[in-house]
Image 1: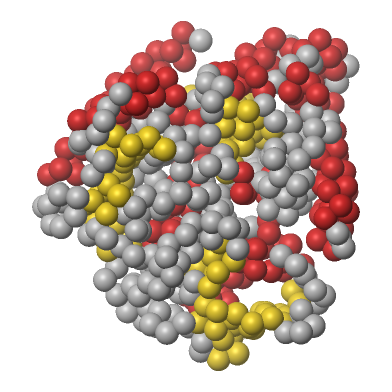
Image 2: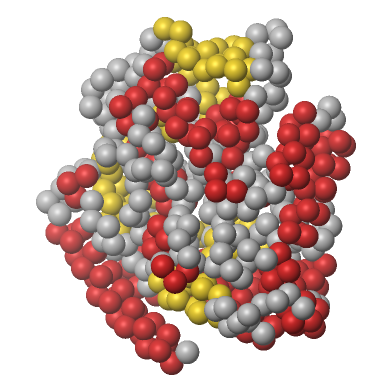
Length: 535
């Protein structure tokens, strides 16, 4: 623990120095004063810039700056045209998407249907909803330069909801030459057709990421609504400045050195609420689910008895109190598909929500055959919403009898390392924690973490044929009542096998200077189109 604290102090010192360098570098940039510039501190540093390669939200946010989507979701959860309109055949087996006029890639080349087909295939190879869509797809092809034709084997009711979903992984369109990159390899260029262009020459991971207005972008005429509608860019430049230390970022927001801070620390809200120059608002009103994920490939969590013991030791209240500590913004919820949705149930969640499982955990661990193998938990210290979970879980697991190796790191290292299937001794891991926006986990098909596809699935690589069969039953169900029953069966199996550990829900306020206007809400915020800045 003392070593961890020392590393923490050293990390804080380097973080503070890096933040100062980042801000001074941004201010010194000769382009900074050219036109209107928004300076933002996002929830994480940006390092991985391929939005299909990872589910990390910072990479999704980058994706929305650079890329566009064929269709999108509005604030009424309705799918709307974006790059394309569509028609559905009477037998519900053929979906025809027609690209709108004026679409160009950032390098000036026209967007073609072939580009979009390649993009859809790359996305669908790794996204949970995309994979399920492809199970029902007979073919997808470009029938001419502006037409994409998708033919189904049988009717499938989530075609549009899959391609137009607002959050990770998003079906972003990119040129064919990039979209043909295998999804487990990152693309070599950042060429999209979206409202901003990425300035590769100024990209400094750990310091800043820069975007400039795409003057060739032709927005739709409809008002902006979530990820749909007119993406009208009202500023010339957006700078994401890395400031992992929240106190430094809050000070910069209050002084006006930055314009926007995505994740406000809960303990500093009273201070910010007193500042009349700052707007505080929960942009994602559907909130987040936080969770723990175990690695099914390696001991000890390849043993379901050990996973169950760990599950029984953890409870939501301890995690939420440490993470949030404010009843206004946190909610105990045992539903895999989040509370207040049609598929919410508490089946299997008793010890998580009541916190009464420690005695049972100790007994289960003693009977599991656990041999004392240390549990390698990755603990990022640079993201406000991910600091508490690994620390609390490590304490509870130790109390249950586990040996725990809590490894301090940063979030982008977690994002890279969690993709490794190597044993923990070779740079792998046993457990990590993350957050999903509610929209990403609100049903069994959208919820990527619930899958049982083994090494083809999400990090942790749970293999469960029963869950995959139930997911197929879910999409074929004839009624909502039938879907609810199947969703409950999926949750029961997920808890019994400990596919992952839901740790509750929370809301997260953002803050921005009063000089900003037009900040959008939605499940995939922040979005920087529609935002203006007064002089």
